[in-house]
Length: 383
Ligand SMILES: NC(=O)c1ccc[n+]([C@@H]2O[C@H](COP(=O)([O-])OP(=O)(O)OC[C@H]3O[C@@H](n4cnc5c(N)ncnc54)[C@H](O)[C@@H]3O)[C@@H](O)[C@H]2O)c1
Ligand SMILES: O=P(O)(O)OC[C@@H](O)[C@@H](O)[C@H](O)[C@H](O)CO
Image: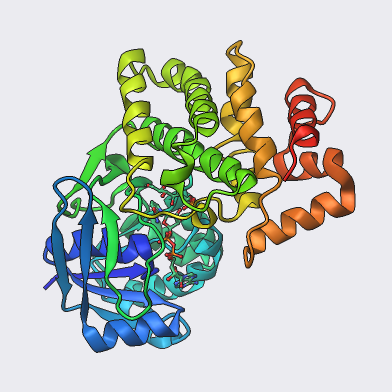
């Protein structure tokens, strides 16, 4: 049986990547640092994936194993024997998993014919696998880097499926929406491309990644941040609030201007793509929380991420992104309990004030038009 190792047995790990690998005939081993999840998976050896919404089905994922990420020798051994490695740990944890992947590769490379290994990072970041590759290469000496150049592929990918926080910790079942999309860069695989049901291939990944992150994730973040300011708890409730809906839709149209120009999407197709996404946000069965969707605002308000980058691009294409500015200003208030990125962001604003704080968080100059407008909206907003 082909062996898959997946880092991060959280929502997307269990509810999407693990499911597709299982359906494609792989024996799946999850590596996670959460003791509850690792123990639970090893005990139950499986879980259910429950699709909610029209046409939703239920799947049983079985025969899975789990290794604790702190058990390095075991994790290294699994990687050294894997046919494919995937991740969904969050972009901030990619550096933490690089050493163990590097050690697994070094162990493989001791064999005369180590075979190819493709490592796909399924995170909401443009070029996440390439980023992971950089981190892994930092851990390798010259000889093993050369071996990795020959035998290890790091295909970039985009994953799209909304998976909310799970309501109970009693099972490891996962509630998901019916929509799913996983597209990988066909040109970055080494050796034969693994056949994974539901994973599509493209020669034009940047277009698909940017379309997804700068539309779905832009809209999600905007909805969550405005919802936080207005006291909504769930995304489906927030998107029914006319002020939020209009602002978010406006933000997506602003973001779409550069996507259409840069990647030749037809304006009509892009409009329909936006409408489909807004309909997905409305799914009441998901009960997706504002706290999850807005998590880590320090990352989401960064210069290359889902709100600031499209705002800068819109300005470059001649449109002032008033709605994106509103979403960014709202984001600067996000302070959900227990959110480390939010805590750090609020500390920056408190210590440096909003002008210098904005610059540090978003990279935007407070004296430039975007910075000026965001600060003015921020000052006018009340919580
Ligand atoms: N949930 C979604 O709707 C969704 C959809 C598409 C993409 N994503 C992306 O997938 C990634 C994971 O998101 P999620 O919603 O599944 O989060 P999650 O918190 O549910 O899962 C992340 C898992 O990674 C584990 N983890 C963290 N650090 C680790 C480490 N060093 N080693 C091993 N495991 C580690 C955590 O314990 C957790 O179980 C993120 O990059 C996210 O942007 C999420
Ligand atoms: O995972 P994040 O924190 O980058 O973003 C939160 C949500 O927008 C995200 O998880 C979406 O649900 C997902 O990207 C849908 O495909």
